[in-house]
Length: 374
Image (cartoon, rainbow, N blue to C red; front, side):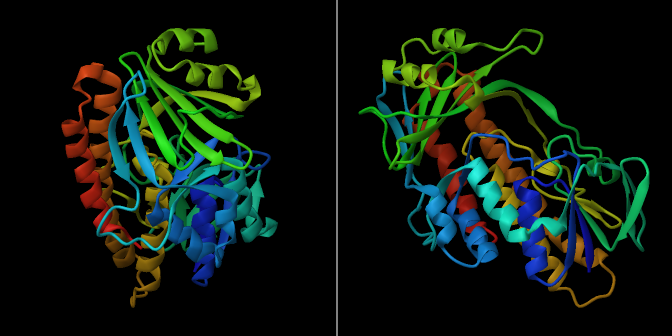
């Protein structure tokens, strides 16, 4: 099958590699003139790591990241409120959770795919979509026909226009992300630590313990009509947190900080139309509350490949319908969990973030992990 993939981010490259592994001819179209490898850190749950292992053929990619064994929620004073093991009892995932520097993971996927399968400076400006073929208009001029077009072009997806009417919405939260070399006694080597606060939330992960390379992000409620906070203003917003955490932010170079509003998409029931199909953030953009976004996108990739290659019919529609059946309900359930956690962390007072409530919501997430795709 000849497949066009729109968007050369992490999900687009992973999808291309997976479909190519199953014998399909793939071409990835990227509107940017160069690789879209900006960003800071990216967390992959064991479910997603298993899919990466399948795509990349061996375990060497694990050396590019830092294993994470637990998610720890703390109050503003550093007192532990809740601890969630990533290797949840009874799940027996044969893989760790791993935190990657985003650029390292991106380069691994890009190198595995090879340069001939990616076209940079090739914006998808239109899709002509029928039951017989899907034709991509490239840069308002050239056209190329495919048996299937996959939209992996993120929260601002162009392909989504031809599939459904779901639209991104601003969540009311801004996030500043950064990477820096830093160490102190309160930072754990194998855990994601989530410091809750009435005014903001600070999360930090290790990226490489050998060099003390570390990822952090600060998320806070924000009116888009107002300018985003600079570092001094963030420090004021985080007043009361342990001083070393504020020092970590202060020590981060400005060019290693990325600040963006957090948008989300709640998926409807329509994930495909004709010969166009969506996956990842193009259809279910979610807040990074538990860092499950990329893992869910990888699950989408695997489910799509399974549906296409397990079909015994010449008509592609039954395979796409099966894909939609498998992914839509699960994605909506996961997003509901993320929204509940987001409400706890960003929109409720610190006093409501008690162990019982967090435990209840994390328990729902725990149960959803049982239905992983891999």
